[in-house]
Length: 199
Image (cartoon, rainbow, N blue to C red; front, side):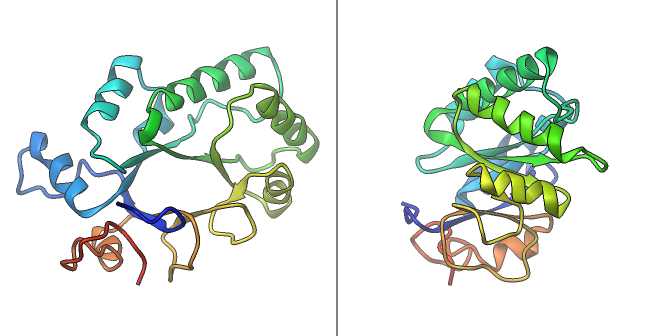
């Protein structure tokens, strides 16, 4: 089991890892070492329901999938944006117990006023989750004030870290682009019995 208040360690994607294994065996090997993964393919398109259910079904107990928000989001309030965001977050919720966080990468030049209205729209959807925002400092402050997290900042209600130089104590997710960096913090990879507790 993973500690309730601990960081879950994983990588950004897994399909390119373990090239010595056939593609069908790579996730199984990955899940032996890590308790979470951030899926970058969700940034390109919203996954279909059948795919989300397959992810959910193959997740071992305690495993979490985090999504990258789709690139077509504008972070400006409006009817089309609301429908797109609701569709994406509902797909994420289909993961059930395997649901991790969501990383929203905010575009440059986004107006803080429009983003504040967008955050209000997000709250109105009634789909709470571990949402972390990455962008200009002023925008991240708005996200923090709305009760969310900012990527690689310790001020939110949970951590969402990407390639951190060190791991703090606390609840959340830490993802690495390099397998070697993630393995340094995986107790399973070091022969431990508790999945992904920080040292």
